[in-house]
Image (cartoon, rainbow, N blue to C red; front, side, top):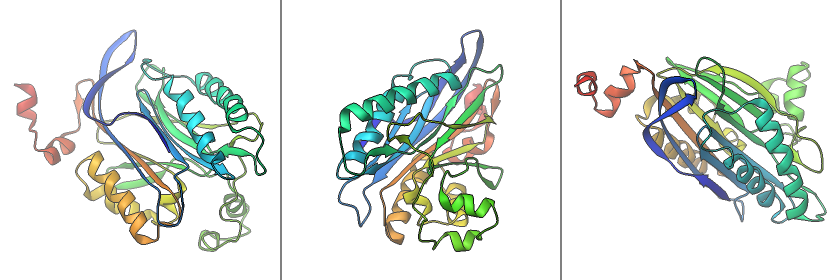
Length: 280
């Protein structure tokens, strides 16, 4: 397991060199090997403006090498005011070269999923969501949970074509087979989605070790009831491990407190800070 970056509470960030608007975020990442794996092949990066989770695959340590290569390259984007799709494409392409060099010849090859968000260089504050594989990005906002990414997996294809139901997918023998990855000497092809960056929003990024153990209802419960990004991330990982912990589990939770002068008063109340205190 490789971790790049640090956790933070109520940090203010600029998102555009020509615009003075700042964004106030809190974020927290945590990971666990789980109950059945010998090592943790997940890796994550929290270096604004990029946040991402990578879930490695391959024989022996190959998966860990692959996920580490991806987050190491993504961490190099840290400190920029914003990141474009071409930046992500180039970075993941470099990671493929690193994986081939670092992992060498392995019987199963080496690769990794990667999914995450970055603050884009559009005129308004925007999350650029990117995804390869079956790790996921969710949004919790105003009481509703939305899965933002679409899995690149055999069972997702079968669901999309109507061949199986979502319930059947959970017990399908090919449930762990993905159709896109970073590595295996192939050019990475991310899916991109733009998502408004707004106060009161909670973003969750996770490896499939979480979604194997928690339903959307369970995920929504912990995102809705935990007051901070840290407690939400810790509770989600702990519950996944407690439920069965069949895989490595990694979670990043990001809370958007303010965008410029627009403040999320709900998050202020939960943290014990009043609007009057901020204005004084």
